Amino acid sequence: VILRILTFGEEALRRKAGPVVEITPEIRRLAQDMVETMRSAQGVGLAAGQVGREEAICVIDVPREMEDAGVPEGMAMPLVMINPEITAAEGRHRCEEGCLSFPEISVPVTRARQVAAAYTDLEGLRRSIVADGLLARAVQHELDHLAGVLLVDRMSSVQRLSVAGRLKRLRRAAGGK
Ligand SMILES: [Zn+2]
Image (cartoon, rainbow, N blue to C red):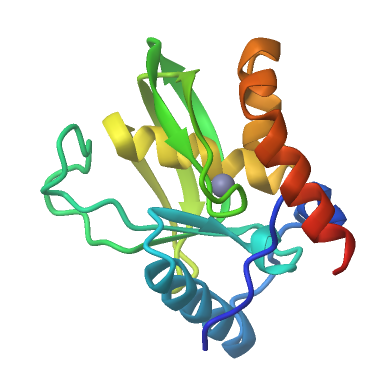
């Protein structure tokens, strides 16, 4: 099932996610719907808050053939991360970044170059990964969402000014939802 992706200006994007206490069939279905939704929108990541849900779940699909993908050998994609947390971060890297909730907007954002993260998988097992490149960026971006932090919050005031017209249009469009 493809879910509607909320866009900037919709208040639900600001809600903080709450921990998932049990991997129920409903949680599995939500994760599957999120993967379908992300793929149909050709995104590399999606957080539950972007489809109006409050569970701490995000899905990531970084194609390993992409330049600087940073996907560890043997790691299957898509990645479903439940109750994820970043346990270590290192280095700095600046790169153009977009978000499915900010259509047609992309700006360079500085983030950690490499992160270690822990999460629960769909089997209920606690796992950990070390990611760099695009995967590390996606993990940081999706964890921002789970804390109610959006791409616009990562922009400098100059960047925000440069996309002010588009942000205004999104906000106005969201007013009707
Ligand atoms: Zn996003």
